[in-house]
Length: 313
Image 1: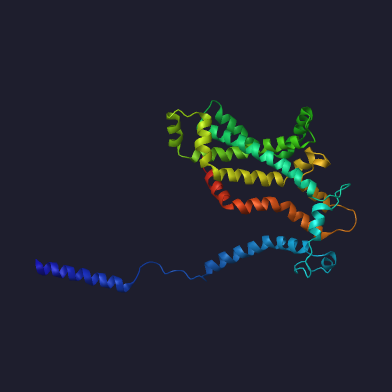
Image 2 (image 1 turned 30 degrees about the horizontal axis):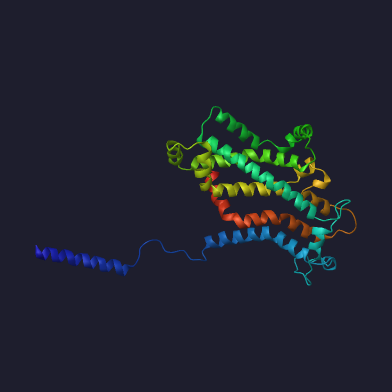
């Protein structure tokens, strides 16, 4: 028995030595310069260059004077950097009878965007929470109507909304435009919040109900602290959608209340004097700075929220 045990132990040691000498098993690591990697990264680089090239042209053009622009090389960096086009785009460019640049439109956009975003997100989050956790009578019908509303073209609703706002006495004012943006943002935001809340552990809601918590207590103390990603998604969608809006701004307001996008259109399409491309480029970049900043600051939370709120439910 001792000899058999010794032979078995010896064979096990020999097998272990053989395995160690043979090294790790598995597929051979792929080379960093494999054909697959070259194709994938090459395609990504080309797409990135395709989308970043217009931005580069806009930036370098906005930093040039008009004599340098007339030379015609739009891709060349500026020989002499000047910020005069930026100053003129902000405070001096003419839009019709007014020559105060984008500054007035910027503050109009702020006064439109802030209340529209806050009200629409607050109402939509409560709607989504109620649809996900409190099954009231007619909830499915209400949700279906909201979803249908998300796909109705805006142009179909313009004339009826004009009549409603006129009867309310707010047509042509910032208040009327805030109401419009709040209503049109409600369907898609409600869908996002409903899917996100439906994906949270149901045991938390049931445990709170057993402890005697009511509608608002559960919403404020349990749901809200767990919902930062979806709130960031809703904020980004609303900020970019409202800030970049042109149609509603030009239809539902008067010239003194035009948002920044309408002011930009009036600057770029002005027929007075010489076409100043550097000022137009600077004005375009200034108009897009707010949504770009929001994306860069909260991009990671945006991806998390979309993944959690757009594919569940």
